Length: 562
Image (cartoon, rainbow, N blue to C red; front, side, top):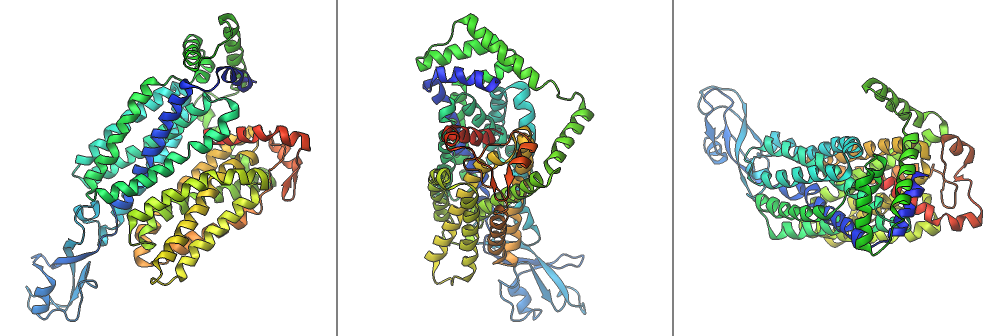
């Protein structure tokens, strides 16, 4: 009922200048964030290099070049490629009669000298550090997801957004001048921590001020700035090859968020629930003025806000107090997701799907060096294919359903990606086409999966369900950099086969889920058990199907808010 009362106010306010301020803020955030999410592609690439100096393992630590060791007759028939990291020599020239020893490389000559890889020698036994640049951002993002849910509800959406934005702007710009690699990756951790508060909170604000009939459309539209940002990163990285100047170029646009946030209001829905009716009334009147709409008289508006707050308190009255009680409540809430066979099957498959879709989506972006000699073009095209993936598939699933399109997209993605392993290098255009088709398919699956999951998980455990799914997605994301930067140099085909096989596995798993098109959305786990019939949840009547079109959009945006 709380939702219904407030949605009536939003319908009365309509959509106008006040709403557009929030939409513009979200578009700016969505456009800028891929710059930092994918920056590691160009900041820490695998750079061709040769060793210029080898150091003796003995105490004298004498250094030699490969030419010196060859002149001394200590090594024979060794190329620079074979001796990039270490060199097996027949003895130490500085110590007469010494046995064969391994000389480690301590200095390198890089083909490209303007990356983090070359500046901090992230090669050989330090190569794993290049992975930390991307993985620390993702670890921070996982932490930020947890903290955002706590603070956004306690102190307000706009307050969290302001704090996160100030931290984001400060640290992204400051990282341009940091000269210590350990400090840089720690800053990346902080930047990752404030990414969810910015994206999720800004999205929540957009949804909470949008009238119900436009929410599903808005959810699709607001996904596209991310695709445009990915394209923009490819272009910027092509024009700016030095990582520090690139970092500055992608950080300065974050300043654009500040003036737009200054024009934004706190969510009136949150203000009402928190009992701050005076501020909520002021915000709603500003919205009415900017949108050219009218509100109920003050006394009637006060009654509506009081009723919304009262109903909200009733729904939260059972919330546990104290750390131990809250921890017990959370653990019980998670365990209930696996209590019955039906909900257990749904949650296990959804966790698999979310883990795989994040793993492959990020992995295909990071592994562009394996699919194209032009990483800049590859990144730009990766963003370009996301636009139709986010927009064209939604009308399809409204007619065909959710289960089969998601399963087919996973299987197609797996087929396209695994086919890359069998394409000869003499056909680079075909490799590029198949890689982009794989990226298109997994991006489309990502978009539908949000809608599908919101309809599968019962209302009373939806928050817990999406919490588990979000955790699985973050685990998949964190695995991608290790596969593309550590495993790929050792086994070049391994990332491609992993991305392809996991996609196929997720596609087959999705076939175990029920269809939800035209179905009664379950409110409880008992409803789910009662309505489950093999592959399909029992559907509505044809009259209810027509009335449910708006409800499907509502459930889709409910998940995105979560």
